[in-house]
Length: 433
Image (cartoon, rainbow, N blue to C red; front, side, top):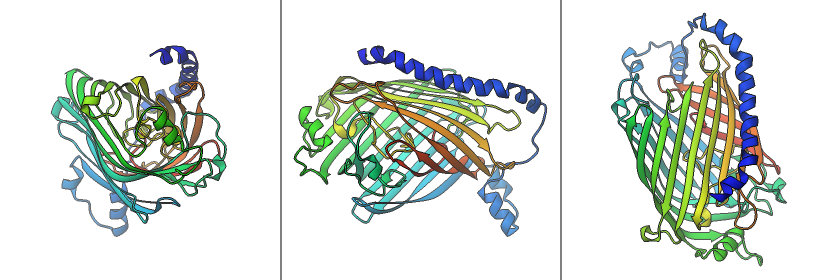
């Protein structure tokens, strides 16, 4: 906790800047909102199904249109010299389990991929609400022979970043001299159950199982050792496998009117993660994790004009975490943070992330929309660098295609750029946050 107190000054300055920019945008649009509120947009949203019906000149099935369900499929692909050609798919769906007036929309996602060099992954995520939001299940299950390109600990200038090549989703198309590819078998079981205790308030508990085995490093013959090997030996972890298992106590506040593409409200979640040896962890540790999201709609006529803020952080309060269990770029539940950098580009025992995004419709029928975004990352290392000592920026623009208007499901394509020559294109289903 002393790390948080020591660094709160610099962190507060950054938060103030982000909030000030958002406040300016809100003030500049306040007059426009008054005018917009007196108008009514009579144009109905159009999704991919509507476009198909229009092209084929078929009539819509009114019974299906009335259902609050929707499934979207997005093919995925990529290439990395260490992991080969990757092909797979992502599926996103949702369902209204109660009245929309008092029940939050439930969402789930399934993805899988396979590579020409044996990398494979199956992952299922869900965020489900029962009628009247009495219970909320959040989970992330995964079994994989996984891979990532490692760049060491912390957020600070590193040499050789310009050799990464163009990034496609989680992986760079080239391996820089400063990069260290890692392959490992991964089993994750993450599940939280919340009970509603008051309007918008939930308390919960859960379990978080992370098992890493058969760890192989492409550059393990380096005389100086890889970052993974050096960290593991310093902190007493086996370099070929380890576990990070624990249980969670959590508190949630949620006023979002939609979990996939919110036009307003707040989502806040605070968790303490206890990782004891008796539950299978190689080393005992304690983590504080929290997430905060805030959404402002800038127009009553076009609520899709939204400014959104996201802050996600994980702090090591005691003990030691294994290297592949360290929080970092894209280690959030849906793996969407840090656009501009690949999976795990920045990481550390403590990690903090900030992002702001402006969302806007491009076509009046809402079929196409766009986003502009900017993010910041900070991470500690296990030496002298503390979280908030340095920040790494990223940003870019993106296009959204409305796939299913009932569930606000969108197909996403973002071009993002970071520092050290890191840039690329990132595909996904639904908004990043």
